[in-house]
Length: 137
Image (cartoon, rainbow, N blue to C red):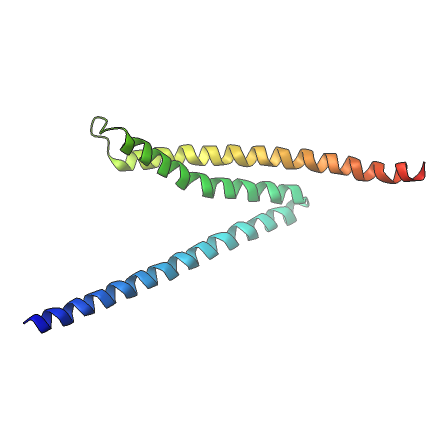
């Protein structure tokens, strides 16, 4: 009977290992697809608008949302777990609220980065235009 249990335990462990490997491959493919989707949609927006700045703005917004939602959800979950059981709060509303706040924070950070990039571009454009005038003097 012990040999049968040992064989079944080995089969179960192999199946669990295969399941974990398939799950990791699926996560890697999903990450690749999301990354390619963000890049391609940003390029399409930039091409249709005729301005690269619009494509960069869309890219920053999408990256801010993608990074902000999980970060906000995890921070909210950690905050509630550190605070001792506040009136029986369940995890789902905390995760949803944290995700929404994290997404809003991601959008805010993306817009701030966009403003910084536009100002840097304007500053660099002024420096490039004024450089040949100085050389001729």
